Length: 497
Image (cartoon, rainbow, N blue to C red; front, side, top):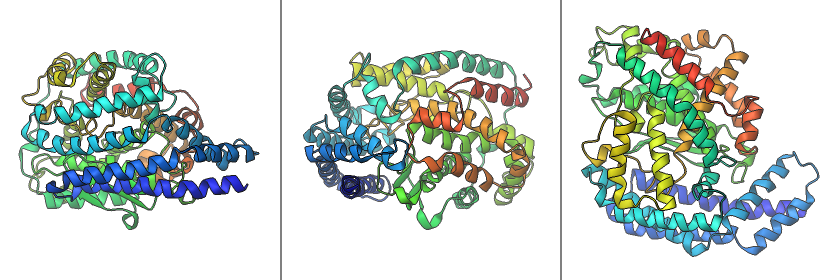
């Protein structure tokens, strides 16, 4: 197994360099001074180019081929490691290193421009930089190659095995259920609760957010939390997984559910077997699977009544004045309020996927050239009106709200919808194995869920491809009906439909 061992040795520094690249990005979003933007762009581009050249040289391709020839058991860990390395090599070696460097530098500049554009509510402040990102991404897609639609080239990176045709079908099936349920809820007249019109001190918000992360099993020894504009989870290795949050005094639920969401991502990364550190097997198998974990914790668990039967008394202790006259059921209904909103990350469970579908359609149009970057604001507002019946007052709550496009994450957004759909399937499977899970939630036992995920999901790392892991965990293909059942059952009860 000399070639296999050599392959592992050659891959390790490459994955370490990728971690360095992630670290540079994390620093840019958290502590980097604004004046360092141009230097950081060059640094990010240099690291990206070096790691790309190391991985995509012909010697690596030959080494992967020789290692593959040594494999005897096609289902072994080593076999899956080589398979993933081969798939990535085949994809990434198609793109010139110079283009990789240009895209990395363009993304760094676009992220800096986005911060100002979002703050001032003016998409025009980032459109030139974003145009470069889209242009370079389109070039990469052409090098990758694709069938049917150029978007498939990028989608394959985030959710291997999924294509536009499948997404269009799943979204077409899901959309009418969401529209119908949202309309039924709108007709069910309810009194406004007014809970978020009061000031919720950020100090107390931090205390509760950290309590939630700890209760879920997040290892602070291998992580930390910091403040950012747009929250995310960043993994440099399974032993260094960092989460972020954002706090607003009059929006306390934002930090609350962000903590659940980002910690859900972090647990997946921290749960990856340590022996796979700095190898192709480390981490989550796809963005769709990652989102299944974060959305399951954020919504199915974190917005459930059993969860709050335990945690609401503790939450109320921190905000005794604000919640003095609010009982558990009032709070439960308030955090599950369904109402069209401008900001995707604040959207309720029923309308959230409509935000994703909007972005998905615009992304496809950007890549195939039927939509120009300069026309994004108009197209965005028209889609918001069509999908949700509302129009943003400015670009900060419209097309400039997300950092994904400036970061070059074109093809990522469908993962959120796939995550929602998959989370319901995983939850139904978990409930069959743990029929007393509601009782355990009422006791605050979140570690039972974490441990089940560790045994059924985390333990596979990236060893299996998304559809393979789907069959391993759920035993059935991707299906929107469990998610529909979950929503209809829950909100029929809340709104007495």
